[in-house]
Amino acid sequence: ATRYAVVGNPIGHSLSPAIHTRFAEQTGEAVRYERIEAPLEGFEQRVRAFFSEGGGGLNVTVPFKQQAWALADDHTQRAAGAGAVNTLWQDERGRLQGDNTDGAGLVRDLMVNNDVELAGARVLVLGAGGAVRGVLTPLLDAGPEQVVIANRTIEKAHELCRLFADQGSLDASTFEALKGPFDVIINGTSASLQGELPPLADTLVGNNTVCYDMMYGSETTAFNAWAGARGAAKTLDGLGMLVEQAAESFLIWRGIRPDTGPVIAALRNG
Ligand code: ATR
Image 1 (cartoon, rainbow, N blue to C red):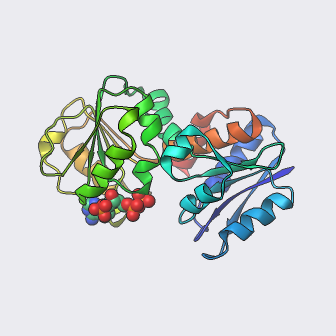
Image 2: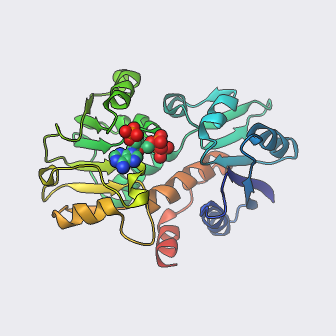
């Protein structure tokens, strides 16, 4: 079997090995998938060693996605904009290739798994950190009428608008100045992890609003609890995105797209 792995620090809780192992079983691909905890100062060395020992591909997670971007010799268009790479492999000439499958995973989970219309939609994105930057190119490619980025530090929202200006209709806002309701609200702040919420007006959520938290956990996230209590049409968490970004990486490495539905269901129940 060819070796694959996810690299991060810490890495103990990563679901990627469980997901890719299920993909391998399902598709019959000869894949062995491990977790690698790289020292904070030793990411490049671990990556180079992995590929020189014949490794087939790496997923990269916190805190190494920007370093992976810097290390890659070539980037896909969606990774170039993201400034972060979560998928590495070598081409025939040994050049290190970098992609970012997070945004494709988000868009696919919304559109394919949950029938959410993004084309023509008014989309609100909460947060302007690395997680949001990582998904903007695929999100804008889906053809929304408008994407508004709201962030506590408004300058970071403006910066993303500048960076992605040529890719679609993007606006920056404070939380307080937002005018709803939106068709889709995506929470990309890390606040959710601490059970915190940005200051959001109830009127941002209407009966047709779909709310998506890029985070997930065994409990309903603070954002989804807030959205559900305000009558959102759907509240979705990031588990589907996690499985879909993994499937997109598997497709790059193996040329075959796994069926994600049963894997999402298995993780949800277990
Ligand atoms: P990540 O890689 O998860 O995106 P990040 O780049 O540090 O991490 O970005 C974290 C995001 O969550 C930022 O948009 C941050 O807002 P600021 O740019 O103003 O710091 C947002 N965030 C974190 N905690 C928050 C809170 N308690 N309320 C509102 N926004 C919060």
